[in-house]
Image (cartoon, rainbow, N blue to C red; front, side, top):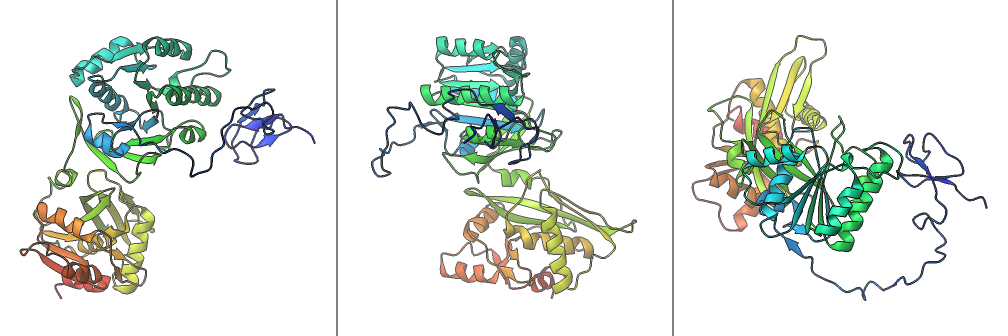
Length: 455
């Protein structure tokens, strides 16, 4: 049988000759020659000795060793802290605050760990200026280089507990072809960082660039190699920053961390609900507050809608912070089951504060927001709305309703509109608060009648 001579670095597809485009994953220029005797590409296993094979029950279980970084919101997204020997990749748009966040993390950890901050994009002087602006108090070690061999020499001599690499695209191995940031260089540099973390128990933080589509630059293999992938999101010219986990081998990916970009760096927001609702004004049509669960905590956010006459043949449909397809679905349900028409009307939807909502429990709030803007009627300031809207117009129950309502009570909300099935569940347990008014609804038409039409 003829032996394969090339393989795709993206998906592992093997071929007898070099191909420009991979038939397996459709990637371009990803084929590399298989080196003779390369154990990573050897399928026969010849010459492999000393491999221990255990049954699942025989494998010893050791508790994960974690340590807190000193930044609570960062630890929350990591799952309680950093795990020894883990590799954490942080991505985000240029200027969003990636380097600022990890320099703050390095500063906190340097108080009780040996930390090395490796900068491939800034000089030592630039790192010093940023540290002064952030008013750092500890003294982490700093190196400025783009050669991986120089970084490795520093690692062998210093033996740090924590390594921060800013950024992984700027480092290169001289024995490999390609410029820094190319597929071969990026894969091999990351592989060396992963090997260091697993062999030495070092915690490695990698800063990665993103493409114009907002995904991590480089081969998709990069995200598979690391243990944790985080994204720092937010508008560059707004102060809110949200740290979101998309992969975590040692914790949940549902948690988010909320920060506020200030002159002295990123400040933690321990009560994001209060911050997102701080600038609410009285009586505005189209503004509705809802409660979404992000990880283990409820998050109160405001959904704003603007429905206005269109000057074009095809009305505009725009949304920020919520899926446009979900908005279209809710509008279709309103037209079919509530008699609310959006024909010839431009529709704009925005989630205040740069939050991205994916939970279906905000459907009812979105529907009421659209109708409120269309009718020009506002809701009372102390109203909070929760519920999932089905395609037949029914309001379906949501999970963890008591936790959502308790968060609303803490922030002064007194009137809660929720699915009637959830209302029955609340009646069986301890009461929320005697001053609250709970309104149960079964259909979206009933909710509109109670809130907008006053029926």
